[in-house]
Length: 233
Image (tube, rainbow, N blue to C red; front, side, top):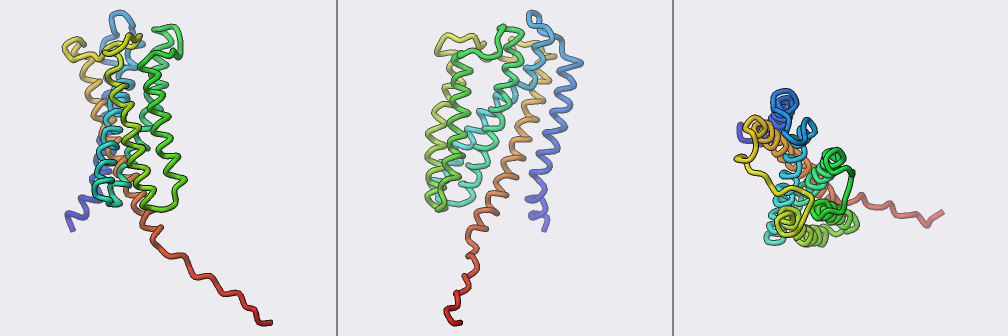
């Protein structure tokens, strides 16, 4: 009984904790952390943009691992988890692009430029959105799970490019910072928000995975038999 209750409650605990941490971290970033020396107050957008970007890549890594497990085992739960992680990853990528644009306009002078980091991020969004689109067109459950897993693995090729592109090619985007190069008062809000976004992502993946499992189980229910049309008058 206790085990069943914990299994039912743990996603909600993660969700509540994530929201609370985001509230605390964002408050600290806006009212406690100092402005950046060169960018001023516009740098405060990093307290959301950076955690969202980091967790978008992490969630897509989860999707990649779930996809491998789905292909390896053929179990429905891994297919549901893959779908859930891809959906949450797409949402986080949709958030990281506009938050980055809000920072780019006052610092770079443009909302968008075809910089290698921005371009690979947009390609990643399109690739993983395509995974979900292809999934919706396949009716057979087995084929759908296979196609979802395979296309997720293929789309994941872009994720390392998003992370390492600023080191491999010339880019307007800055190379990843380390805590040693950032003021401690700025690092704390980042870390709190990073865990807050992670906990929320885990909550959403768990919730969406459960919904997908129910949907897949519903597909097993045989449709009601058709009433035979009477030929007699």
